[in-house]
Length: 457
Image (cartoon, rainbow, N blue to C red; front, side, top):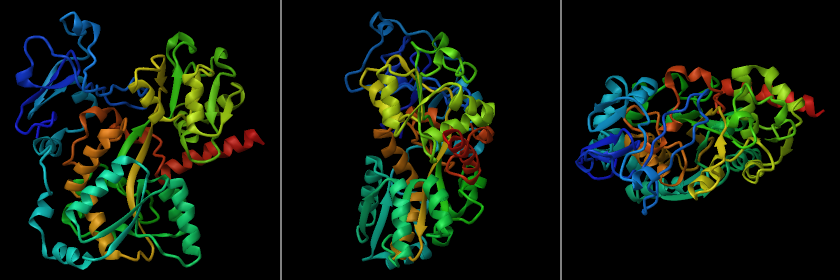
């Protein structure tokens, strides 16, 4: 299926409008763009404004209304299968490079079940039969996309009674820990961002090794996954499996209030910004601490200490407060903001003067299984389907419909949504990011949290 959703249509990227368009719909000049794409962010270039898909009534640029294309956004393009990939994305991303990437491009968008699921096997058929009539008590992050993916699972496996509960990960971890301490084992599996799974649930001993539930070869095979050494969040055991590593930006700034209109890690200590920085209290591993940890990774912990002390920041309780302080113009820089809130403001046509912070962190989305899961057979089917090619394509498709970034998979045979390539990390230099859901990232976060507690007294 082509990226515009019509099977068999050849597509190309309009090099001046920065869009993917059907080849037959591209005459000598580019047509009005419907979906714009930004290049992938690296830690040092993550501040670029994210482009978003337009509504059904396409917004045309002034240049388009005058009947000509905007200035070209990048160099030459390469035809790869039915895709035209800009040269700058080929050189920098390498997301589809090599044999695995070409195979992924060739199979992009194939509907229905993955080959392993379609062909079936004796082990898989037996697992499905064993799960018939069981319930599945699932905890998931409260996103519409998660619910949509679960709906697809229900359609494919109607004999499993799915009880999906949307709970924030920061609330789910202490809830399950308390219940298990009291001998209550109500939950089977957990699907969410992985930081609380790794940093809270794993040390508490409420999870079991998830690889014990793997049945499908396409899930077990490490060659099917990018960054196989980062498939699990911890060396303590295979408790949390990561299906998506993605970039996320928890910062924002007002171009009208920062020196030169562009915030960098070099001018963030400019005296003009003293008292104009809002930080979500970095006392726990959330957005405020995560962004400060990335700054420390790139500039040293001394830079963070200077921000916390010399710049006289205002500390706020949550990410929305931090975001709104920038949108209203009360503050110039927000550290620990809501990427979703800023996206919504941009998507509605506002916040033109508010840009993303110049660095991003590496977050992870994945799955785990609780100790003494009451429905192990149903859990086994859910885990294997979600991590299959079919399950991951479903996730990417549904996530892209309602979220600003992160619609990608670590599977080598699943492409990112074209609108979300900005969320794709530089897999060749992944060590440059603070991996906030991994053990290595926890060390970075703890350094910042300890420093804040010292500064705050």
